[in-house]
Length: 400
Image 1 (cartoon, rainbow, N blue to C red):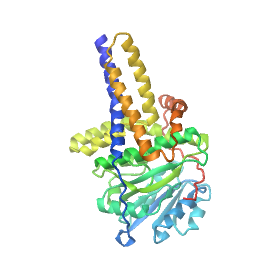
Image 2 (image 1 turned 135 degrees about the vertical axis):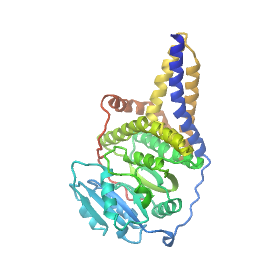
Image 3 (image 1 turned 90 degrees about the horizontal axis):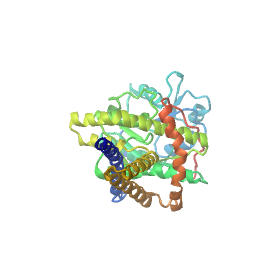
Image 4 (image 1 turned 45 degrees about the vertical axis):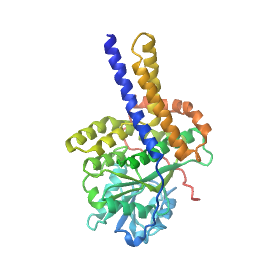
């Protein structure tokens, strides 16, 4: 009996160590990154279209369109899919001279269906490159050109750096949310870039060769459709590549209910994707003999940061208790190493990329942030979210 329990504890400790070590390696590798920007001229670019799925985005669509229009030669390059809108999204978009497609389908709701509608519109005269941008983002200068060039050269999906802007008067919870988002989307993706490994798609600021998008179907109500899209494309031989010099920025929801809705969708979807897709990626890596799929499986296996911390705390408390009752201390030692990797990795990411935006005192509020997240994870055990739900929008700041 003792041997059996020791094996169980050892196995669980190793399951915690793997994602902690993966995160640590990614964060350490990000330290060696230095931006190497180069100017891209419009003459170098192939033909392209920008698809913007929009569901009741009247509060933010103008800022998004303004940031894109300054980077393209004609509004004809932009297509807004007004998906089941009941507000002024369509009318506002039309004022900017862009193409507006109005889609009405209450049965098939979600971003994936909207994007599929836009692609079907283009299929008779397809462009070389498709860019997918959410309606609630500010697109930084030169981003459009960089994404188009990289996707054209690599003939693979390209993901821009996607960060969230803090509210004007951020709470400690906002600061820690921003830190977790920064570690996931900037620090870890930069580490993967330095390692020459693919990244996961983040949902906006993405460019694809037209022929690549034809390999899979976008029409689904998956609550993390972008993450699934990247996995499907990787298994088809087109692993996404991170482009750290291109950037899009969204904003953290200020309304408590909106923040909870967004986090629930992201994190429930991430957990479900880990359980369903990590085995699929590992199987694909074996069958196709591709190391990049192993790298993507390891990247995907890292759960949301707050959940990883909670799992580490719960597991080490169990192993310490077991050690006091005469069981092996090896699982506790393994978890101590995992904890070291986790803490040092986050501190490296914060020091390299986040200390100017996120003050050090905010790190002291992490325990309270974890308490806020506990109900979210209990909800996953009881009733995991499985349907796409739009997050209520706050106004995007225009003073970029």
